[in-house]
Amino acid sequence: MTQQGSPGERRAQARFGTADRADQFYNSQMLAYLNPHMREFIARQEMVYIATAGTDGACDCSLRSGPPGFVQALDDKTLVYPEYRGNGVFASVGNILENPRIGLLFVDYFQSTVGLHVNGTARVLSNDDILSLPDGPASLAEATKQRGGRRPECWIAVEVEEAYIHCSKHVPLLAKRDKHLAWGTDDEAAKGGDYFKAKSESRCSTT
Image (cartoon, rainbow, N blue to C red; front, side, top):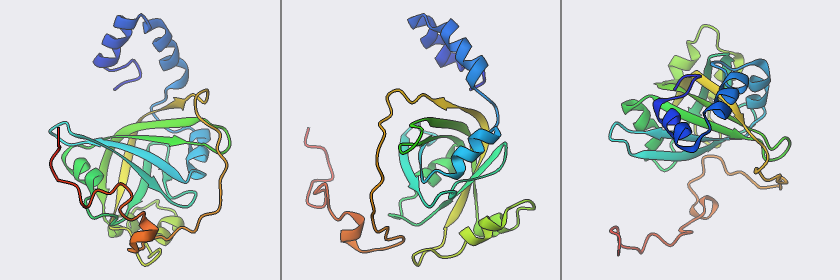
């Protein structure tokens, strides 16, 4: 997409009569880079939603979380974040290896209730790649170390193409509560167990 909208966006705007409203948004809120306010916002977030798709068009939306600053803006066009082993599926990484397009959504549920969309292209980097970045901050070297017995399997570097606000009017204001975060654990109870009772279900749909 560009700052004037994708062909699909333009078709939708024509259908619903919102082209003028959309142009106002494009021209006042959409940037092709991260300004200092966006970078500061990202630096204090503890979670981000990630959207990817493979070459066959199959989509995946996932959540990544970590301590504030686990997603780092290296400059106004580059974000990086770590990927851990998780369930071993690597759905997001697999999609990126086929199709580099990525969408990220940061939502501040606890202060401003504002969100930040970041769209762009992604590539998969190793820990060694991250450590060899010429302008990488010392915090990146620290982040490649083990946490909860795990170190990142790889990193995702995102080249920013669009950055824009997600308005706060329908975002709930939440209160944080204490929770022990068992980083890297393989304990089934700590991971949620078989919460949806899927283990005993048929692998095929019943409908």
